[in-house]
Length: 203
Ligand code: GAR
Image (cartoon, rainbow, N blue to C red):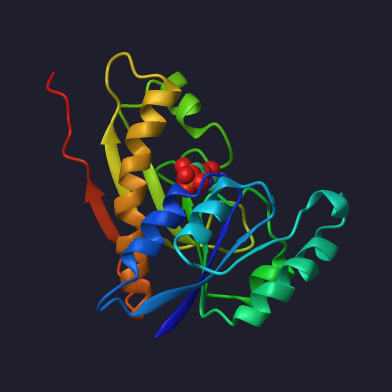
């Protein structure tokens, strides 16, 4: 059975989807939910589900990423995960940290990578008049929002969409995609998962 640590900074809806998926014949189980924000809503949700949690605030380490990561690594190493899932974890990790867990870190990003790396993905897609949006799960490498793609889910942009309505529709797909990718990845199957929301608006 693989052990999965989930790193988050916010509400943790992807974490909840991942934790719920790891049951029955799933080849992995959650071992830790870890945050850079002690106030992250995701920590409460994890505790409610009986998952061990830890928080390492990044603010005291301003400008000292290596110091922050060495503090973050303490609870992480103690939990001995096989796989790290970044689920709305909004800190950039150093190459040294990524090297330590090479080939074992997954991330979900709210765009169809390689389009729209970074922040404000939905607003940027709308500003460009994109017909489709979506999300990507990829292996984390030292380059930001890069690394081998392990799955994507696509949604159509609808007339009148705002960044908020699009984000909400993509988030529903994130909750399908991330568990589907993790299930395969935990079974050492790296074939990408392609999902289509099949909610295309005619015309
Ligand atoms: C998700 O939409 C995720 O794709 C995004 O943050 C949100 C977290 O929501 N991640 C990034 O933007 C990473 N650069 P959640 O806390 O409800 O899972």
